[in-house]
Image (cartoon, rainbow, N blue to C red; front, top):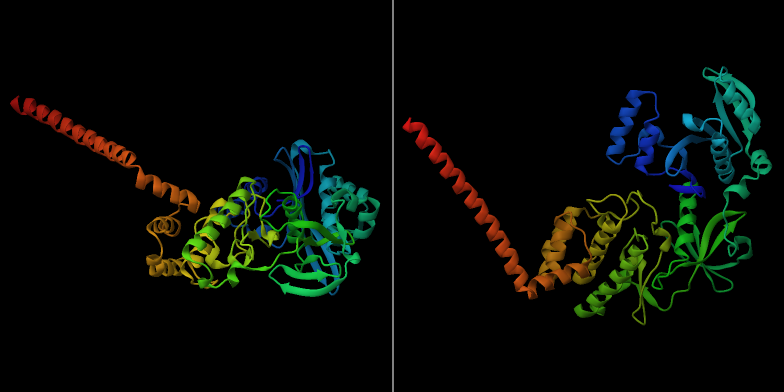
Length: 454
């Protein structure tokens, strides 16, 4: 979820793929048919159709659902309107202004995306709802079959209720985009463009127009900015345009290349192993901080001329639970684990390392089966310890660090006592099974003897 307000035990958030919270909401539905349909999707980690093309705001106290509000956008020409679909507050929190906080959150978002007004249809017999909307400044503009259509000016409410001050959370060291002068575009990527500024800084500007994506990246980069991992090229300052987050200033990279641009014969096999160990060490540091790389691939790994490994493109990192791993190339996407985690990073790392070890660049759209075929065809190039690692990663649900796999391999190789002990344990278990079978047969024979003797 993307936090709008997080204070003490209260949390107002934009719901994305937190399936447990979705279930809490679905369980409030009065329609059993709709509830069943949604729960089937959620069990399969699919956002139900009911919630798609909408923004759902969730209000919780100590992670217990208090209420939610869903709304969507309607574009008519150059005018954007925000349509409130449903506002729900649980019985225990009626008359505590929780509905007002949800409505203010929706109007704030409407303002951030440039919506002119917010519309809601209100049952003409629901005096409580009428009072709620009128007190916020809504007024009636018409009727439809569901009731009275009410509208409010977004700019008016944002200004009168000081919603930007309430919901924006801009760091003191943030930079105003208007103060920057761009001199050169360095590169373009899936999420944005990178520029050099007049004073020699590196600026990444996001190109996405999705409010939820930008808000999520802002929240994530604030955390990444302060982590103590020197091998990550972190944001130095976040950049805003009229109070809206648009990008960030990052450290300048030294001379070097991304791992993707390094030729296979640039390193010996031993040097490749050292690089892979360095990459895994950075990944482990991030995992200890509950930060996941998500888009781990050779393009996002930088090798300086001094040989130092750095992770770039930190705005793809994930710090939340329940993020579905869909934004990466097919070949790096874990076929077993869909939620971004240590496991999905380990899988992407394994594919990255496989390409470096073999010198083969696998097609981005390669399926799991195609990756396996490439591995099977080239595994003769790998030491046996690495074969064990890849057999587990590619042909089972097991996910672990390469270094741990290698240590286990060495332990098994150089600890014959342990192997003998395991063999003895297995032999002992087999002996007990045989003894049990013999005992049963003897007992059965005795029973038959006395039975037939009679």
